[in-house]
Every structure is written in C-alpha cells, then in structure tokens.
Image (cartoon, rainbow, N blue to C red; front, side, top):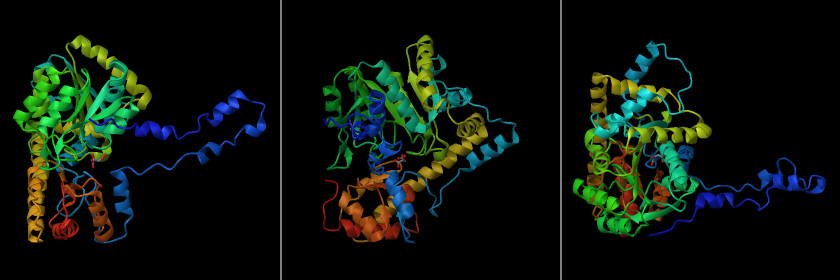
Length: 444
Ligand code: LMR
C-alpha cells in the first residue's frame, strides 16, 4: 500500500517559516522590516492546474473547430450539447408558479429534500431509515459531502486514522481527505493487466489496514475506471471490511447512471446498510439529475439509534455553519419536486435511463470504430466497464499526443468521458486513438 505525500499540506508549507504579519507583531518599532501590505502576495507560488478541470479549461481555450472534450464527466446529447432533463425543467416551471421565497435554508438544508434524497439512495422502506437510524444533511454536491465527512472523521475518529482510497480514484478524493487532516493511503483496485477488478489485492489490503481505518468506496460506476464489483464480490468486500473493523465512506455520484436503473445502482449502499456497517454516504445529484452547477447532494450517517442520530446531526451542524453556513436552495427544490410526484418521478427514471443507454451505445460504437480503424488492441474493457468513463489504458504521453495532434482533450490517466462521444465525432476519435496507440502497449 502506498502512503501519499500530503500535497495539499505541502502547498501551505511553501510559505516563509515566519509570516510577514507575525514579524510585524513581534517587532512593531522596526519599520524597515515591516513589509508592504501586498508583499506577501509576491511569495505566493503558482499552483498546478486541477488534473480534470485544468484540462477542461485548456479545452475551452483551444481555438480549433474540431476540438473534442473527453475530459469531464458531464453528460452531452448526441449533438454534443449539455442536457437539462425535461423532468427537471418541469419541476422548475412548477416552482416558478409557487410563491417560493429566497430565505436561507436551515444549516442542514431543506428537510423535505433530504428525506426524499435519502429514500432514493437507501430505499423507501429501508428499516434503518424509517426508524431514524440514518441521519442526513444537504451538502454542496458529492464533493461537499466528502469534505464534511472528512471533517467529521477528523473530529471523531482517533488521531492518526487512515483513509484508504482505491488505486486509482477520483483525484479530488485525496486532497479532500488530506485537507481534513487525515492520512490517505491507497488500496489495490484495478488490475491493469486485465482492466478488471483486482479483488484479491483489494481484500488483502482491507485485511492489512490498521483496524478502524476508513475505506472510501465508490457505490457504483467507479470513477475513473468504470469497473464495479459484481454482487458476489460486493458481498466479499463487505464481509472483509466488517471482519477487520473498518469504517466505510461510500461515495455515490452515479446512481441510475451506471445501469440505467437507480434501484439496481443502489445495491452496494443497501447491502452495506443491511450488513450493519459503520457507514457514511456522500450522495450527488450532479450526474443522474444533470444538476451539475446547482451543487445538490447529501451526506448521511448510519447510526445505531435515533438518539445517536440526533447527536451526530448536532455535530454536522457545527461543522457546516462555519464552513458555508447553509446550502443553496434551488437545486434541492428541483430534486424534491421530482421525487415527490409519482408521475414526474417515473418520467425522471425514464430520462435517466435514456442517458445511461446513450452511454452504452457510445461504448459499443467506439469499440467497433476502433476495430474498423484497424486497431489490433483488445478493447473489450470499453464495453465491459460501466458508467460515464472508459479507463482505456492509454499512457499520459498518448493522451498528450491526442491533445497536441488531434485537439482531443482527456485526463492524463487515459480516462475517456464517454459522454463527450457522439455519432458525429466517434470516427475521428477512434482514428485518433488508433493512431496514438498503434504498435504500442496499452493497459500495462
Ligand atoms: C469528473 O470526474 O470528471 C467529474 O466528477 C467532475 C469533477 O468535478 O471532477
């Protein structure tokens, strides 16, 4: 297992050991040593661009007409246009006809939204939920949920508790946990030779981790690999985590988007709750509802009793209030509206399935076009992986070549956002991928 350097913390350590404002405080009469108000800014180092959003910015800055954005996990239709789901538009229209004011939400968000969101994840008749053993707050999408979770762990788990993330994981997981003061290590996940799950490595790392560690687990549509455990493998992972006394933070960013069936995609969440885990759940409505910029999510905690839930909730409030006070309301109202109306809810399920189906079609088309272009690599994993991404096995250099020669932008780990592929650009993409991978090894 790999111990990661605390990149987030080391960025701060670039500061001089004694900050200018401290110098002024200790020697108030020494005018010459007092820096000008702006001088500390001269010492601020340039930070590196974000591994995902930095590439999206380069895409935006690129003037080429044939440019393709395969970097970001954001859905596009077959014309390459961002989609607002008709059920979401309908909910917005309904909200406009009501006299909804713009007062602050409570610290923990819109209570009715939270209730609906948790039922969506855990199931309407989940016993733990209906008996008050699951408590939740509205968060700034899944990222905000993970950040609040990290803060909660750092306050209430013993000092030195390690958070284990999959190798690889969504890049932002690591600094989110490190900024919460937690040590991050990796557990084996992807078998790079087969582009499938390294189950034995995963189980061995669960067994080897110090008791009481946190395992950050993707609930479905693993990002970036698109490799999910089978129901049987979930059972073995769940048992191993329990046996070794670890905690689980489940990150669910793609419920409904993976298989097209929101109920099926909640399999791991519901199974882990039924198995009796010490578990937190970060939930996002960015992808499955297409509410990216609205920042809608929840963080929930599975507790032992309603009384425990009340204490946990009081602490979540203490974390959130100084962090951002309370969450935004519009997106939460949309989700609440869709999930509260049976008709709109079924319409939504169909529309979500439509997005998942288009992704599946594009996976098959990309594989077929790669073969048509003459590629002799085995691209089976493009269709066997699930969710928004294909983890192609391309190297960073191949990704650079795609950008420099073909204006195709993707993250340097070889992750392709299938959402950026459509029937109009798939030939171009397949030919470009073939040209940069031809005669070279991939997936090693
Ligand atoms: C992604 O992985 O592309 C998305 O989750 C967007 C993001 O914030 O990184």
